[in-house]
Length: 171
Image 1 (spheres, rainbow, N blue to C red):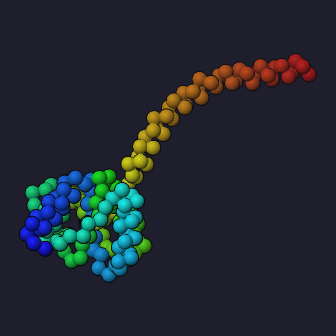
Image 2: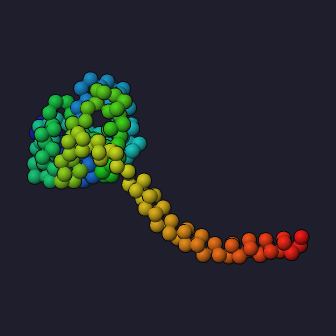
Image 3: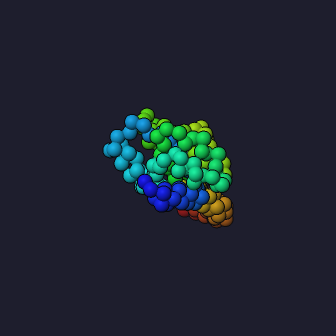
């Protein structure tokens, strides 16, 4: 790889570190090509990406970035999993690492916060953006539903009382 190619890789990695909601660093020693392809496919389905890069180039790209403390995790055979959504990359990596012990979560970052292995696992346990939005919309709709039920309840009660009186009168 010549100097110009290295500069391009450093620029690309710099974009990844700045624009991603979260970056997860994993060791992948022992993963076969088929397993890595499967991992990449799962990441793509979740809207996330995977990048294998030389650690020295990744460290250079991290210089001056808010998540520069993450460079301590760049040792050995590392793969970077990243996405705009801070939760999706961590969820897929966590799920794949449970199924395949050759992929080991080392750490990562979310914005300016550097995460260790347990931090990445905690991030993966959080609800995704879509899940959070659906919970919020459910919470917003619940009071209106309760109000409609409360408004309709007296009329329903009156109707049942009148039907009871009518049945007694008919008998």
